[in-house]
Image (cartoon, rainbow, N blue to C red; front, side, top):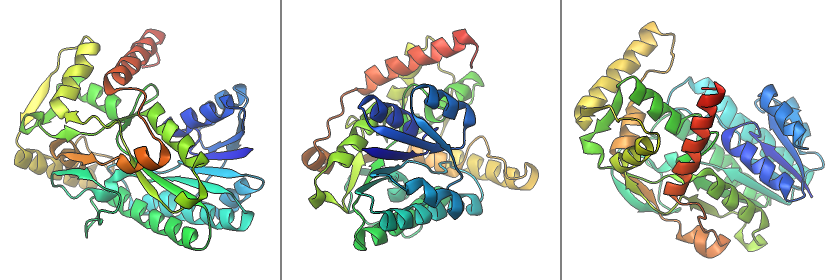
Length: 334
């Protein structure tokens, strides 16, 4: 079976491509990181250097593919609308059109729980929960738009399943945990309202499991959407305590109220727009909301319909991340 993984040089896409290749499938990984692309080729994976924002580069990737995993996205709390729109909306448009005309047997689309976020505490959110009237940021806005494109393609007959994995971490993570470690090293780790907010995170290989299950799911599940987490939410402060204990590093938090953190983030955003040529500020209002407001997902649909079972716990996942992080430091890669 021929399988295409977009975002194949990214954190999730690379892990997925390697899993599929080890399962004996003929895998093509599409991405723009040439260094990682060459390493994937050494593993026996076909690499396609493609810019999915361009129709003429995105559509030819689909030819001859049986299954397509669309993992590519611009995921950031900060940036220009044009960049988010081109990466998340246009790319999805070109790929779904090509999948429809190319007779792909299954598209597995990776969305995000950011589509639910509304700066309020929300627990056990189900997949059919209405989206907030105003998306939390440009990333959430464009991922909602992309889901709508996928839904229209599904209505036109494209076999598709969508997953919404929450807060991925693990070896190879370049965003969530590394940012926390960097902030702590600078003595600027924000601990808002005591770090009481419940954080619902997911070890990356558990998400890969969910993607493989979605690929193999029966046809009657086409069009369905699934929340994916580890199913073990914990307070933000506990996550930090566990992480920095395993790293053998003292935690150096800045204690803030939600109100003060939001004011500080708004000031930093304004300064970034005025003086830093739109460079991402150290703290955004979205980041404050994510770490200060509880958001947990109901994953019963994935468990009951896909057969999803998180096999790596949060604690084991942190151990694996920390081992990788320390090895990278010894190698001088960090």
